[in-house]
Amino acid sequence: MINQASTAIGAGDANLFWTGPFDSWPQANNATDWGERVLASLHGVEVTIATVTWLYIASMVLSTILATLAVAIREGMEVHLFRNLFGDGLRAFMDTGGVEDGPNEPGGVTGAVQQGAGAVSGAWAVGITSVQQITTLVSVIALVGVVHPLFAAAFLGITLCLGGVSQFQAWRLAKRREKFDDERRDLLARTDDVLSYRDVLLAHDKDTDYIDRLEAASARLARINRSLAILESLFSSLQGLVFDVGRLIVVGLVVVAVAVGTDVTAVGDIYFFISIYARLLIPVMGMLAGYDRVRQSASTSNYLLRLLAQWTTQRHGAQRTGQAVEDSDPVVRMDRLHFGYADENRAPVLSDCSFVIPRGGTTLLVGRSGSGKTTIARLILGFLEPRQGTVEVFGMKNAGLNRDVLARMSYLAQARHFVEGTVDDNLFAADTVSAEERANVLQQVGLVASHADGANMLQLEARGLSEGQKQRLALARILVDHSELVILDEPLSGVDALTLSEIDGPLQDWLAAPERTVLVISHRLEFALFAGHVLVLDGGSVVEAGHPNHLKADPASRFKKMWDADRRFS
Image (cartoon, rainbow, N blue to C red; front, side, top):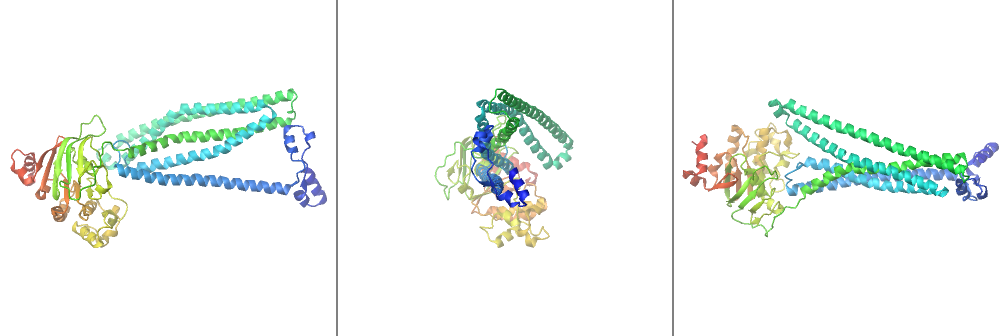
């Protein structure tokens, strides 16, 4: 190459340098080391420097394309996994009604799936790049093995030592990392709780106590993180020590090879082996780092799998005994039902509970706070499963969370929940009820009159409503519904007297309609004025059932005592 450059300069023609045949490969019989023998195999091949340059440019372009493609594949895989796992997670969450223990909120699905998808796609990316790194590693070991097997053995031994140190590091740090991840998740959850309940904590002068607890948890997390950083630094130093010892071994082998008169005789050979040894570090450390990333993401992946396992847990004891009966009477029947939550220290919520809800009209379920009234509603809906006994809804026993059964019911929860969207979106009736009827219902509950822009109420954003207006919207959602069975859990809790006076008439007319069956769960006994059936829940079971007038006429009736104790009716 130097000769060609000199010739081109002497002739004043740069083209000679680029297009002249490069045939200065060493002769095999003149080769002084194994590297020259490899180059000697190219003797006689006419190659121009321009050709070599273009080949280099082409290889760089190809390398860039492959690197970009690898990133695109990895990111595309992560997006695909996130979309599919996110959808599966949410569907499983909806279809099982959540779980009794562990994260129930859909936000937990988002965070877990997003991290889990990144972990899985990252693992695939590490697997793909490891193929390239293993190929490079094998090539390096084979290359030095051509000179002498001792060099290959030394390189392989150093590789195994580095891998052993990495495995030892993983074994020592795995538990600490898992503890750090758990503490971090717990701290984030507790912080969210404090921020969400800021007003309550301030009102009870407990904000300082909880902030102090968060600070203590944060300090504990920092200590764990510090110990992790120290251990990782120590292991990194240990890896560096192994690599330096390996370098000394390679230099020693080269010196011995020169001393005994092998083909390794030139000073350049010593530099070659040192540089090739440094080249060995790239694939080895790349694979170890990739494996470490996969290992660190394992806790996130396991967390995701645990959530999915909880959400998709099959319900034991559920028996589907045929199709739902169209005109079954009673609509709901519970027989010797037992139910308790997972906490073993808590007494069973329901014990030997039996009752029926007749078809048509309103049934009122009353009982003390915490007696299990909401639990009964969730059992009817299929969100919970009985530990023992049967729940029969529309003629189906222990149907669990059945979409066909749910399609015939609607539910007003005690906590008012609204999705992002307009008032019309939150009525959940655009596909079944005309816009005129939906607007009339909003008018009936006084929602139109209570808002400055009431004429455009259907198109307004629901999140902009006041709490009182949200109460009205929740009631409107039920009034516009035409389900066969409607469950109202404390439908008037928190409603002020003025709002109650405005919605009382439409609500009574709706409850009196014979074409639907309504279960009202409430401590407000005025619902008994237009209920045809009353259930009294006490001690985990229904202790009284019957028409409210009959119960009020019985001096020994618990319902009569409750009625008489309520000053509004005395």
